[in-house]
Length: 357
Image (cartoon, rainbow, N blue to C red; front, side, top):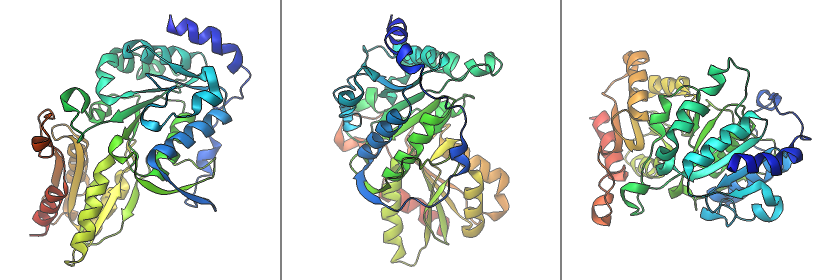
């Protein structure tokens, strides 16, 4: 029923929109981030990206639970400007996640929002349909879908709301995966995701929602996937951070600098595709590697990066690779126990010190 509703109320409106199959804007990308900068929050940066892309292309629309009211602050104000292109859905991820596949297959560009912990409800739609449809149809269909997933952990939300499932989707071909850690990256990567013709799993770490940073007002500034960013240069040890783990990692790096330890911090920004070149070049320089990943340790992004560096950069290593991840257990509700599960400054500092001893 939701798919019928989408097609009847929106198809006529969107069929006049220009074709966005060509991506010349990617070729024009460069490191100049524009002349005018504003300091805004991570959530506001996402909001700006959504608003700009919805103005740019009438085929772009949003749907999800309670998004017309601006849940988490990201979609606030969008329903007033774009009206029926912002659709509140029932609490049924298997329904509206699948509806997005159908909408994309007939030429729309849906952006779907939910919590990452609710991805399990829609796994058949995500894995059997979104990830595989282009392959199964011999490349005859585009599926320009952005699945926006909120990551909640470290906020006493307990096991049902604290999952970080992005490593599992690395194992499924056909899905691109982005995890921005700064306001500028959030805006630039989300705009890239919306303009991409393949499904993108876009994970937003809610621990970063209120963090502030400079963001360009350039509405065509998109950050290409597969391009890591060196957030902090160093010479003694390489620290690769995933999503919100960048904050404790930078705090540790700044503290250790006073002790004469130079820490280089790399943010992959996307894990599919993964920029292994930047990581390997950094390890060749420092000889040491620590990977900080909020997901569980087993089969994590940290495990995959560790495997790649062990295979392709083994002779650069001067010490064993260290992984700082969440423990292989569910998040407890107890505040006294929760902080023991996920990466923190003490664990990161200890891992760095191990590589130096």
